[in-house]
Image 1 (cartoon, protein in one colour):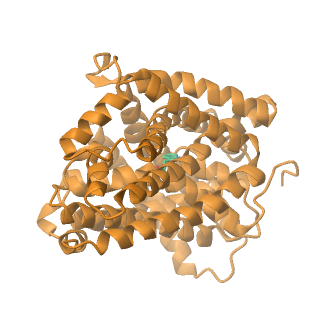
Image 2 (cartoon, helix red, strand yellow; image 1 turned 180 degrees about the horizontal axis):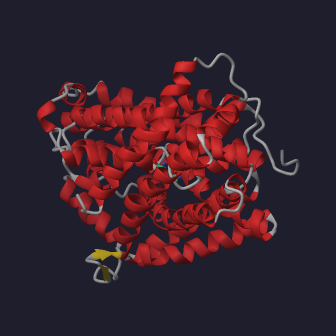
Length: 451
Ligand code: TRP
């Protein structure tokens, strides 16, 4: 036990912080547009299978490494592998992935904050169709001063929470923001499903059309499960390192996964019924919430008010996720280089802001700077989310299943649990050793075009 390490003040504190990390732009921005482009209920069905079959067991494995190692990703892998350079490398990969994801995630988070301000200013009041909203989105995101201002402001918000520490910062913020978020989502779902004509949208989300399922949908669903659960780069590992051995990991993991999945599905129910009620096409791609929603709210009674709530919700969700990303690289720096936490938080936050500038500029002036044909933003998104996360997931499963080994892992897993049925432990063992690595490998190879 590492006596100097901070610990969560309560079990619910850990669950809300980890769920806060998981619930983010992935749930409210990405999940709905993936559903809209990939067959509605059929995609949701596949997503649920991926979360249950691969997501939950690997979430448990990742938290377990952190709680047992009691350190950042690099330190935990180093201690548990007795200094094996390969596994240290896996930890390093996680920290680098944290840097990369935060550097572009924070740009979109900045847009949501910017949209709160624009909504309050009434900038969307007179937009008549999605085309006009799309134009406005292009105008705003292509103004360096607008994009960089909110990128910077959002980073300052993130730094200030990490600066305050684990319990006083992350835990306290999550305990306030997560209930607020759930409340805002429910307000918007009720608004959406009670609109005249909303029924078609509800139908779209519930009626599975199996003919919509293809290899690509399965691949997208698994990738989304990883991204949405914050899985594969050491964020859950780091949060797990602040967890007490008196608490049950499987229990907490189930709660985190349920909250994350529930909010993704509710996000569907707050967007599609309203979209169908307005007679719009759900297959809009990544700009769905920025182009379509501002207009949707114009046709809704009290739309001005609900639009502010919506973008506020997006901002809050993004903030509990950006703090988890900054926390990973901060603890790494504190543990490994003995730099005080506050200093590390400010320095690293500033560095990520700078690394993030090319991501922001990918929308304003640097559209033609291409790496393998992708803009800088798309490139960073692709290598971190589609390559590094699944790779990290495979390594986590292999580490727990084979290298550190089930024999050593299970006693640590059982700490804090009461009466965990043995068949659940054996199911988890089989998934971590065989099912998860094989499935992720298939997804991984197909995402880089090898199969
Ligand atoms: N899960 C978050 C979302 O859905 C994003 C996120 C936060 C994340 N921390 C992460 C993704 C770590 C991958 C790894 O928006």
